[in-house]
Image 1 (tube, rainbow, N blue to C red):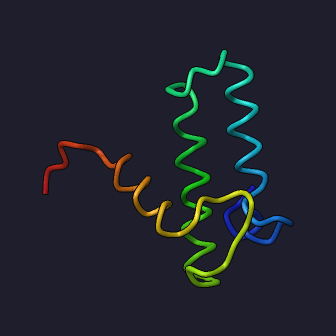
Image 2: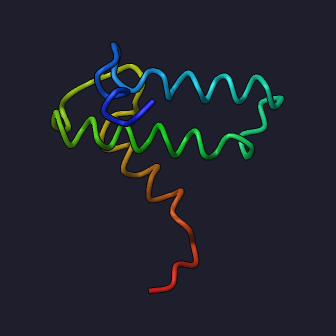
Image 3: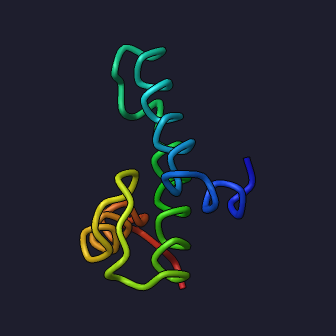
Length: 81
């Protein structure tokens, strides 16, 4: 699904959260094999908070402050500028 479609599901971003669970189940809960699905969920969650504000909530996403921390933690360590 496209980002805008996932933002409009009930609850928002839910298809992306489910995709993570499906991936983990298929891959013996090896989180490394599902990183792209986590990144996809975080992209949706970030767009959700940009659209609705940091006080908005959806069960599919971590709170806005925690989401930003997780995104920073996942950023490549050796970025070249």
